[in-house]
Image (cartoon, rainbow, N blue to C red; front, top):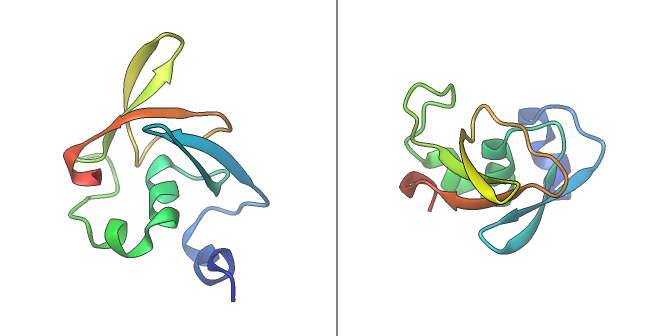
Amino acid sequence: MEKDEIFKDIFEPYDRFVTINIRGTDELVPENNTILRGLQYLDMERVSEADLCWNGECMDCQVWVKNGDKEKAALACRTNVFDGMVVTRVSECLE
């Protein structure tokens, strides 16, 4: 059974994957999901076991997303991925 079939019930519905770049590496993650869910898709065990609140209160999932020629801070649990997104930095909790 493929990974997307096993874990599909914990993600928002998706029909395809989008490419996001995380610190220089292109990754495929499910569309219509947050950055944090995308990271969980890439490393289910590690992200699931991390000490995160998943609702933005702890702010431990902060990432920095390229916005033109600048970076913009965002919470991975509240920011949806989009095709071509570039995540330049991640918080220590997401290392």
